[in-house]
Image 1: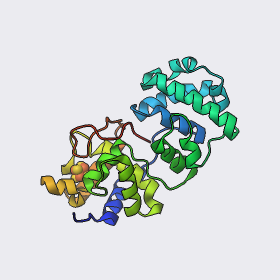
Image 2: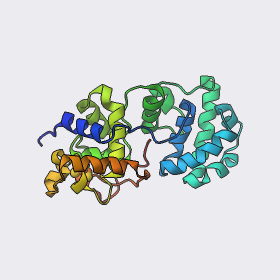
Image 3: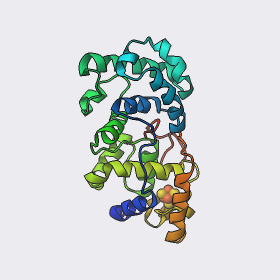
Length: 252
Ligand code: SF4
């Protein structure tokens, strides 16, 4: 299959979302770790509502480590999957205290060894808290990258590998944010806005489905306007927008 113009697509996304960044509010790596763990199957807005009072009550890993999971549950109940999340967060904080001196390790292997922390969460923490180049493939990144043609993959892992091959390393973290923003604002799971999409001239999905875009200036305006709208979380959906994708949740 013919390759899409990766550099051009990245340039357009960068122009469309010049201020794209992690939407999960955090003041340090620990807060980002907990916020990312809470964000599975939950919107960033909801997580941000929860983490304010949560970190006021429990500012450090030691505070969480002392809790029974049941004591944490009332604070995070509105995030969904709260029993599992409470159990994992308490266990992860105990591990941070016992094995890492209460610090979040800037190391993939150590991060992924924490209870409830997978590759996607580790990538979010590494890239946003420690400046380590990484591409966290959440439901938006999976869908948008495969629709555009930046990847042709069936799994998040394969999508991540292909994106890392095709995107320059110094753009990995930014590209992650651009794709998330594009998925939230324009290229939604069930109704992609191809007629107002800045990437449409280069997008494989648009070409295959005969969708056409507007003039560049109009598309850029649409993208920026969309970027100002409240961000929404999404359910896992395949690149074509129909069934479930092999990835869940999302990452900031
Ligand atoms: S043209 Fe359509 S499918 Fe392609 S990125 Fe834009 S909104 Fe998504």
